[in-house]
Length: 189
Image (cartoon, rainbow, N blue to C red; front, side):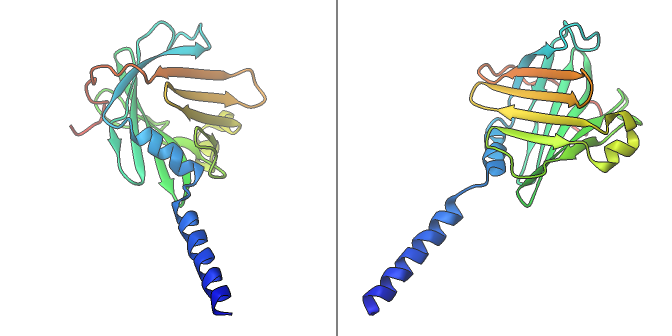
């Protein structure tokens, strides 16, 4: 009887230990992204190739700020330093917001739109359907879904507007860090 109780106790402890060591896929995604903190990378516009605002311009991301609950990634399009992707982690669920600034640092009137993952996703991909704030601010974006993938070689930022042909994809090369660019517009340092 005592051997059986000891056996059950050991199994319980092993089970608890294994459970506490297993990370959610969202946490694995987060940790992979945090490993790039402080680094900058260049990329290319994959879709739509003919986009006037992004096509043919140098695209740069800088994983500038990371802590336990927030990652800030300025995304520069040529000399335009107006965009920052803000990822936040809350109870194993990641949200994506877009911070848009004017050159003087003031907020754009269309700002902090994005979405929150509906689940923990996968270790290499997170989906962000448009949230209520986004739907109210930009009615046409009510069907937006953003997703980010990250692995050893690349980071992709994607946008699909469901029910339309709208698709936007930027692929950043994580194998070749570049010199860190200046601060994004509106940054205090």
